[in-house]
Length: 416
Image (cartoon, rainbow, N blue to C red; front, side, top):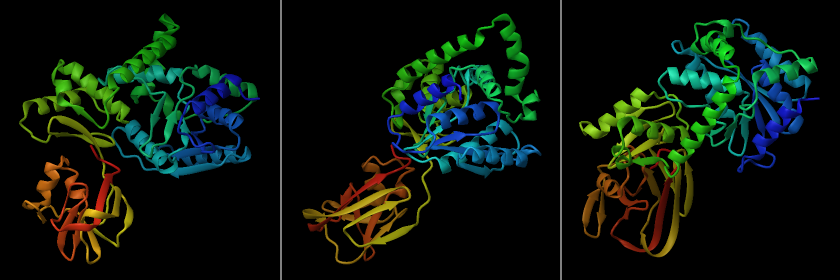
């Protein structure tokens, strides 16, 4: 009989997600270790027909193939579907690279309307708080809930539960788990904290994990308050009117809401100094999933724009779902652009000129006057007919008007 405390935690985590599909899959990150094994079994008890396991083989240990085999046998013996993926981890910051590779797998497998559950517990939260503090990244806890780039929810149901509770629950059921020998190596910062630092702290302050859990709750509440109201951009004036350290904290909290967790305080302060100095009109800060760019008096968080073809053809009326946005071309009784031949949708033709009622302008100028940031202009669709630029969706169309067509464009990524 699975531990009821763990089952209740899973139920609470899943029921709190508002946009989860009624029958959407509930994925569990499953390494085969004690924590993820306890989570997988609790999830099966709560949602027996919806649970799926994901095992990511980082190929960092000689026994990793055996771990894959264990996880597959464990899941299939309990009739739990499982997906396994092998990834390559670059040298250097092994922990960070492994995490990035793992989340890429999650992004590929877990879709909108689904949820991914991870087995981090209260002791893991203590390690994370101290590790990020010592790395100069601020007092930043693991989020209880966040989003993948796919839009799927990631939740950590066990963040309020001690790790010992998970292992005790498995022992009571006689369930074995895998042990990763690399966890004993103090060469990794997290392991050093876990094996050397925190045991000493717990001897002096036995309830330190509960105290750090309260700190995490306070930090998350302040984060929600500070980041409230910011979308994909933040006004430079809002950052200019506060001390540099406070501005970097505001920027960090905003970025966390957008899924960016890796940037250091030093990098944020340096970027803000570049913005304030004005020596670089377009300062850029590369982040894990996107980048920061300045445009006019705002800082934008810019996600990577998916690749797309240089041109497409269509016959109006049309609704096209392109890799980086959607284009809709509709008929109108008046005020539209005329079209006698098929339509070509082209990109990065910014020097092309369009004839307007007051003269002609380049596409680049129309886009600039329309407030389209420079990094988006090469990806904005330009509509040509018989080699003539006849429309820039939502911004301008050829001077010849009458019964005809109007075009609307919406970016799916990287838009302000």
